Image (cartoon, rainbow, N blue to C red; front, side):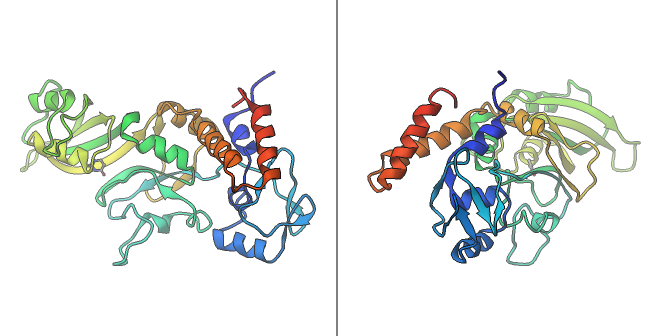
Length: 304
Ligand code: URA
């Protein structure tokens, strides 16, 4: 027998009714609250108005306006080609352009960007409503690789063994008290034609941490003049030919690979199970719900 996919396992996890409806893309939190309050949602044939009611997707039937709701795992995994001049935030009090304007309206209330690209950095930005994946990709302990294309203005084309590039490779202090940067991969790319100001030299830098403005600070620390910065890849995920300002959904395989790259394939299950176990033993939990949860957890012992 083949084991269920991580998505199928996550879809089957018991969770709050409002969360289940949000994961099924029933709408924003406000839309879901309104549907519950209006008695449009039923659980096993009875009106369900309490957002925190626990639902067991394999056993319970949820309907909205009579239509069956299929349980799904968190839904939004988007790759955005962030253009320069767009802020990595969902709203800006001074009205500057933000990535929110490039996202589908129905995703905006629930998603967030994974990490941050500077205003003047372009390239691959992940956007998701999956808090576990967000945590894994941004936690400093997980060392997910990120590849950047740097455009440097230099007097003459750089050799791969240039001491400044060697310094980037071996690690250097950035004056932030965090110790030397982790070893990085540096590859010299194409150089433009010589001009009055020297040449535009491309360099690919792969780092496995995410300190604030790290690449710009690394270039400055070794005396290299950076004129453009672009992120090409995160984990094994490549921006490829995605047009500037465009976005696309990740495939299930790409999501799985991102989980694998951050070493946390089983994290969603472990976290969800820990939360469910805590709910089962919380004296404030309704006794019949707690008993049902304990049965469910015992029946799944080892499977998750
Ligand atoms: N490093 C930077 O300096 N800026 C970015 O946007 C990303 C990495």
